[in-house]
Length: 493
Image 1: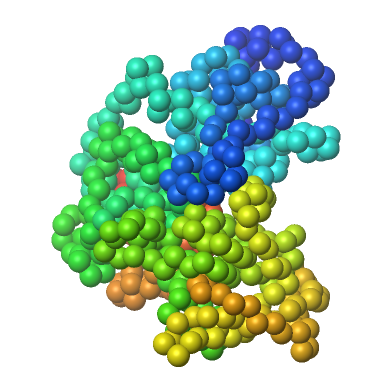
Image 2 (image 1 turned 45 degrees about the vertical axis):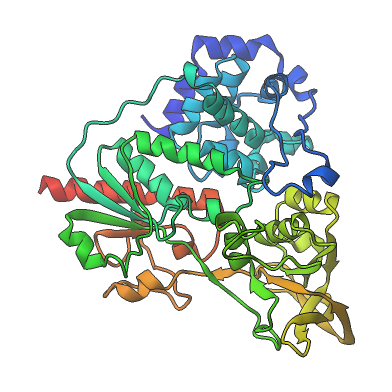
């Protein structure tokens, strides 16, 4: 059955038709979009591990589900990289069948509680909502996804354990336990493969654990999603570096028939300006990993992180927002975002910018660092900022920032966190002979995410160079489909 046929079939169910007819489209369209409950900004800016968004109540979720028009051709689904049947799960919430809503989400998504929190729905599913054509706010798909997934986690007594599929005896290896790897593992396990996920770090979850703070994505949520995969039979091996601990050839000797690489982009970029080697200048990757994964904020930490009083974060993406908001929570008296364009060009989610401002973060837009200044002990004490103005659009479509001649200011600062992007992890591309790699160090993939090696597939940041959780998950699903087709054909010959 095609996706279109499945949509039509589900939409025509008697319960769904009855539900649709209970409230007229005009009434639905007159309803206001729900507002996500949040912790008070002054309080939450002191709490490193308490989630800012507290989630919808049952009443709020029901009210928001009423807004969905259950369109015959749901354009919202076109914006979802993993193909969630969005109207179906929302209508289950409206019908009071929240567990069925969660089950619908899990048909195509291995991490609904994660995606409901961190995915940029405003640029994906919600950006395709029919309401936008009527100049009305989109249905809060992300809030409802989180609600259904959280309900499932907190009401285990209502859930029926998913049966493990019949094993087919074929072993596959997944490199990296981030969103791409977990998504691929989910689909391969459902098809009966013996799946082992190899993770270089001591914790499972990849960027979901080391890169996203708990006040945005609690570890217990990630752990619950991982447990679902364990229940399906997925095996996780931590502290294992593919390319070093185990080589590509050794995986074959261990009888793995196909490999999916989702090792991410963990190599930080810097600007190559004077003073970057001063004590007090570090990458957002190092900063967040140490705080989120290594308890660096604790008083008795073995790997303490600098807790600057005047902190500048360079960049305007979600990772920059995570870094500056974390610095605020670690006691920064002044926490600044330094961004060379205007706020309108920032790639960060609007919600993250809003939360940062509410928590007291300053935004120095149209500024760019050109030098970091140290004291006699080699510690950072100030930075020089070049004021910018916007010129003509560049290749990204955004107006290019241009330096204003002579407009330079010096700002005192004792910690700088550089968050201007990351490059792919170079270990696997360098360690596998015959693997085709781009000039940027990304693995080049072809149809269904197959690499230049017939048994190796890849997705996520190791292919894209940097993207969102949901795009990485979509890559994982595409790679799984490709691996499944390859192995099915190979085993039948």
